[in-house]
Image (cartoon, rainbow, N blue to C red; front, side, top):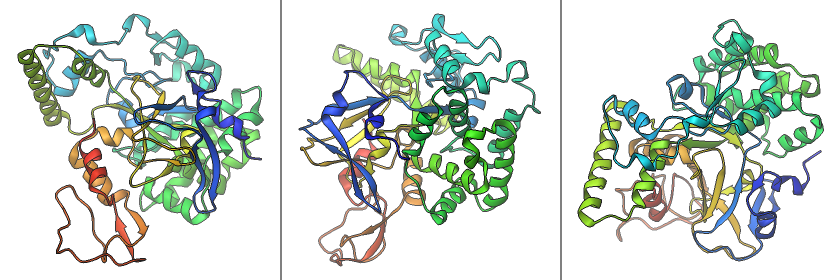
Length: 423
């Protein structure tokens, strides 16, 4: 039984009923499934909705490498200056305008049993209420033989950075159902997400785990069952059900990126300064990012993923009219209009998530070239080609051939400019 349409709005936050008035979910086709459509004029720059995830989890390698985030909402826990010191490898790095950092360490709380850290009492209580009572390892937090630790170690051994999913997202799905009083409601909510055919599921698993994915998937399923089996979800623990659950997370998981340093930079951008002071501050920030890239490379943020019911209804477009972001430095997703969207028009987003847009230019090129090419049925070019920022078709370029199947990453230079130079 699918979740009712009213359930897709139940995790929106902010003005009550705003999303229900502005958008609606419609069935598009058997190939695309559902789509999100405007029911009134949405102006460029307008926040269409703000949504919290059903579940979210930090990537395991990201956490292991000391990217400190709230275990519930993924809010960055380091102060901006601490973040800069770690990423540059310079313990003496000092940031101007430290008052612009919004991290409140005095509010941080630890689970009294396993000592995982939360940004606030509210997050500690929310996690305990939804899933953490099942997942809390207590004093066995660092015991390599604890079932959850064995599961996480197995996951890290088969899914290396750059990470795109986490086995703990699946664990929190199970734990949520195990703790819930109304288990059927949560099962209906999770069933709302896009499903794939068996062949498509296998391709997704192959992409996440590599060439030896069948043996690795079975190992993960066995460890997952040992740690988390729940009778109400028995189908999820069968070989076919676990593959489907794996594919659900791989297909629908929305990347989440948070950074106290990024928040500090945005606050600096908003300062009203004299031209000379602005020039000096901008030069300082530019050099800071160069130092970070030299020392750390492309991994700047606390990164994870989450399952968002309403956002998952948005289909992909090479020329999106909306984008997702996480401007509150936590897991609250903002969907914002990139242009005016008329009533009846479908709301589409790009396949590059927030974390990928924040990474280096080289990393974005690689993702677009190698991982996320789109087979495009259209008369856009006569032969297979990749649209790169330094490739501009000239009048002498061959004419398009209608109906030819070609492989394009992003067949529009204005989209490339947006991706390569995110604001």
